[in-house]
Length: 183
Image (tube, rainbow, N blue to C red; front, side):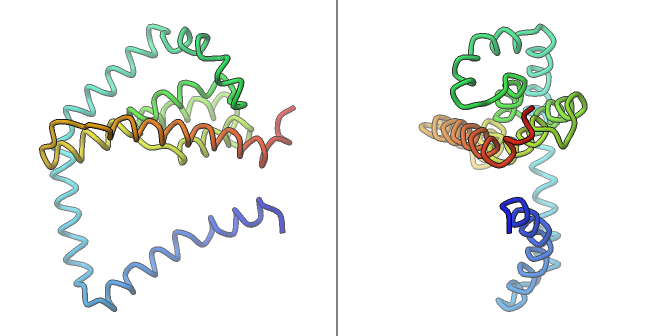
């Protein structure tokens, strides 16, 4: 069995198993599943309303950064580093935007896939990279803001280190798994 067959099998069964296992586990523990779900949905909505101004600020900043072509200048400066980890320069905007905004990263990923195709090497690497990194600043703003933490201390550095590790791992592993698509 090839690595792609294993990945496809896991992908096909992961979500259905979670959808079955989590409620069954909750029932076994005596949790009122529907009530807990509704409470979580209410809390999620309230958090969404609270963070809306921060999201707007982040999205406007990203749009300005992209529109004034600073992304291309930054890409040219960082190209020697991206070449070391076998990351195509077309994916640098995704690597930069992902820690800031999930929706901004989805927009960048959509443009990569529209230009190069979802099944291309760049499309596959963009998907893996987006799944291997997190929206660090969004997460910190939401969760630290929700509990009124004013000083992030090492959280920003740790989150960004995790994002960098995710980008490197995605680049290296995709080269190993999908390198045959490079032609």
